[in-house]
Length: 460
Image 1 (cartoon, one colour):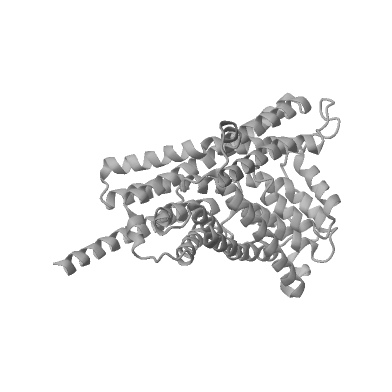
Image 2 (tube, rainbow, N blue to C red):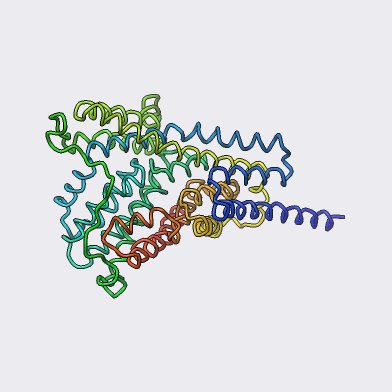
């Protein structure tokens, strides 16, 4: 009797695994072949998974709506405030001044490292496509000033800063979504994410530079002669701007963002060392910290920019945050459905207590999803949502699951990615060059990031 029961249990496990796999493949097919919106495809996938796994119609709908609502309650304001703050930072011209400061402080030789690390950390509140369009012309101009292989190094620095920061560093959209799906402390995600991002960007860029000098990069084939010109990019108000008022100095325009990041970091460190008080808990909360930064940026903008320009920045921020919120929310719907069908409990019996193999599995699933779909954020939150429920049962801190999913989602950024083509057209590189500075380099970062993630998982 006992062998029969065990056999039935294994058969039911296989059915659940098969249904989960079919769900993931189905979502990919709907997005790629049927051209269905990713948000709709994820809801359809969650609906199918719940119904075929025995949740029933009512419970399935509850899982979908609960997952969406819970995740929005967790990350909705954080995403909205972060995007709005980034939009105001762009309008204030903070990026151009910050890059000029980096050149003066660190010199041209170290510029690719400081440039990539700054984009990947400090500037992650700015919506990725907007950040890329604003900084690409700067990177193009500076690439001619930093010696041999300058174009190669700046192209790689741009790609690494944009993509690595997106999934690892709050308030980057991918990092926020991952923290929400995994129900993480945002402060914890911020601290571990910054460490992972800086290590990954610097190490990968050093590797790419060495390979470029040894023949990987062919300037005559991989670079364009003319510097690309970004079209339809709103230029910052010049000194003595449209109404007689110029842009504020860097220390003033950047202060709101730096204050928000410092408050988030302070709250995370206080939480890790066990220091708590009502004031610390309030000011260190990422939502409150970003709200303080947003209010500060709004005050600066109102005092230094024309009123219509401040309003335009807010409109852009609301437009950009809308699509992000919907995609993130439906990712939470799928994650909740996976949790409710009990996949985590089933997977528990198939892993040892080792942290290495489970995190590699998370990385692999995210990598495969990204290759198929082409969306970094969608691949990362789907992988985390599917495999996240089992990891606490194995004694693995969810923050490392989130980081591993983010790392895997960076693997093979290719022609299906809008970011790939923006990096190719806005920087002085051919498509052949972009395959090296974007696809190859960010794929190396995807693998390299697993080194600090695995080490931190073993230590913490």
